[in-house]
Image (cartoon, rainbow, N blue to C red; front, top):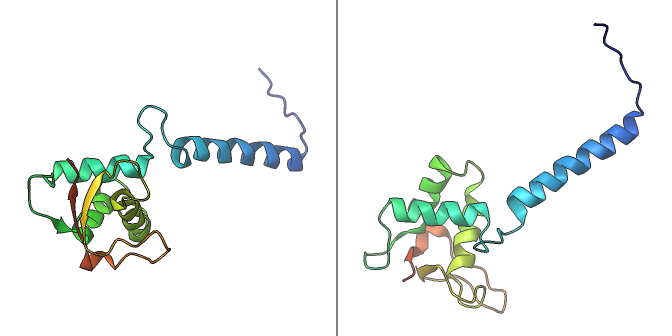
Length: 126
């Protein structure tokens, strides 16, 4: 069977391929899931906290410890992105129901940034 090569315009193919890739990234990572409203990184943080026993009736653990667990096991991206996710889940003004109980400076509604992860502690909210 002879294969035929179809000539295509490279500009059109690049536009189409990039659009397909961008949409898959947006749908897969950037948009929250309709079932629970969580992005994959939120789900990974909560799973790691549950796996390490960092639940509401146990003592707080350093945020850096949880960030390291998530980055090492489930989300091999930058530590700052993971910590920013934890901070947002701990802020009472960011989510209707905070998912993480934070101890320390997690920023303010006025735009003050959170303290470094080595200074804050977290556990799962009840």
